Image 1 (cartoon, helix red, strand yellow):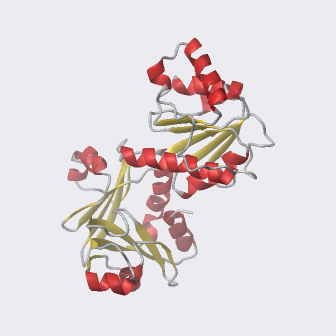
Image 2 (tube, one colour):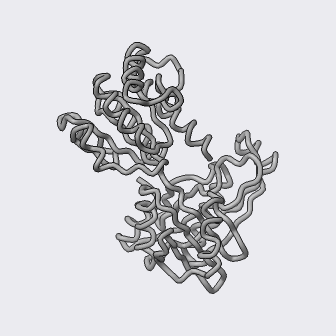
Image 3 (tube, one colour):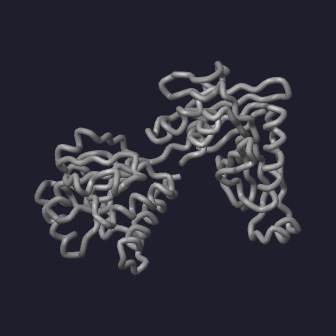
Length: 333
């Protein structure tokens, strides 16, 4: 469950809390900009901003913010002595923004994970001082949730999105939403079950597709965002491709693999991988050549799929596949 869903649950109960976000990092600090931790009014915390005594101090400051309702920007320098006491092996400086969670922004909080899953570009703008606290969410289509933003946010919208990390300017924090890449998993067998679980854990937005209802169902894939039981050809009418999608082909036979691969190759994607032996892969690629696809296009397909770790079990194969997805995603960043 994402932090904003947890925040919504707290507000639903008439409770609240404080949200801590790493907004600047210098050096080898444990977490990257954008990492978050929510501290509920009951003292429970979710997520992490790096662990150790720094996180313990952030928890204490969050408790103060809950009481006062005043946001604050904290600066931590992780020197050698502190690292030794914490048993940590990395240092660096971090700025952490701690803000109160307010019921008036529930609609805004609810919209954030939806936009992230949909891959919609948006900026979250927070202004704070001893007397003022306001939040705005600006979508790329111009729709605004929360308070009215400053004109500079609209003017520099695309520049902030390209930053891909929070920017602090005076008493204003601008955060581009961290979108979850879409992963289409074709095939709903044992390997697919573990791919779906592991990929969801590392923030992929998973859709599982199979033409067998007894396999493609939420009972087998409870963590997936969508599970579709439909013909492998017709299902493409229900799928969107904008060039940022990841596709993993794990169907039960090379005929289905070839059908899916042909349709996927006619659409823009970020990653396409297909499972199978060398013989099966060669058969599918020969078919694709007959269908008019050239060597260069077919060379972009990750086949055999996954990073080589001598995997054998479905669980191990899933780990190798998701590891490759992560590698491609990080190379893009």
